[in-house]
Image (cartoon, rainbow, N blue to C red; front, top):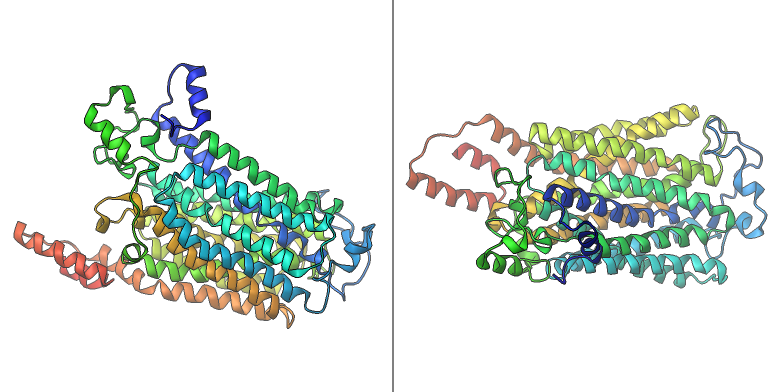
Length: 539
């Protein structure tokens, strides 16, 4: 009973009865959605304040009207600023190497995030996920807020901002493996692509809310753009502590194998509720053995041997390189690029960049729906990434024509870029974590997710870093880098696409029991070798 979240215990006492399984699932979806939206919201301030820390020296002065109401400001924020620090930038970022230093700040955060991901995934399989996630969110909020305090403390030492971002990155690494493990424990494989596509909108919702929060308080000092999102994620951590049941077993539900991933396999399990007082002694032992605290972890090497983990990890490396470059540099790009012969303010650029994530929400849901219909993740992800190449080319080539054209092309680019990124990081990770080679054990879910997303985060760190250096030579080179990254993702998925096509076109042949046993053995050997085409021919 001590593992039941305090908020749920209080609600039980007030209502006098427990929630149904369906209600718990809705609660888990909502809490994890808000939790990871807080994570992403707290990552946006650096992209919003870049133009304040490092103002563009050749930008012409004057007012630049924007025709979409008060959300997009009609005056140049930097020109109307009352403080010299905002006009001249903030040392040490206002020098000739300012963009390079900003890129180094980004890579410091993402490098620590990437390294911490591997450790966090393994810890997530052994510790109480609710407490683990709460600690990570509160720690993230503290150090993100300390970065903003550099404004009020008048700090101009580069290493201070570097260290704050590095420690914040380590705490941020707790988020993704934990929330995916929780979702994988409460939901089975059926229609996981659509469920995860809708749920993964938290990434874009977090980016949007973080951009709006940081931009809204920017005029009071750039430090507030970090403190407010930092407080936001701390409150999210408290919500997780109070209301998140990490596993169904923690609140009195169980399944025949004691694995939460099997809940949807049992007929009519949506309506079935198993309360603790109705569970027999033997079943209670199952609950205690497989609760969120006592679950046995799976080693990194064992998780890497699961078919598809390494290929999808490499795919995510390049997918996140593209996505995170937009995440960290799009507001900066918008504020320093003429749109319809005019420039937008720093605050307007932050607000405008949210439309990229609006397209990302649609892309994530669409990719999940298509993958469920086709039952082909690799094919879906590759098609989206190939479509992202011309969409980025069109955005760079024609985005300057007018505000309307820029918005439309930006949303289309966000749709195709965030679609496969969402698919690989959610539906694929969750399904690989419950692969048959683990005998139906879902306890590797956090570890598998950490391997895939940790490798992807290396690309996420590399993209913004390279952009900081390449952008000094021109933005055309940056977009060429992004298009090459999208192309590599599609090429890496080619072998898996062939395997999916072969699986759908080849019909299984009848076998005797002995032949089937031998076939199962050969299946595992070949599958571990990632030779799905030969496997399809065997059957």
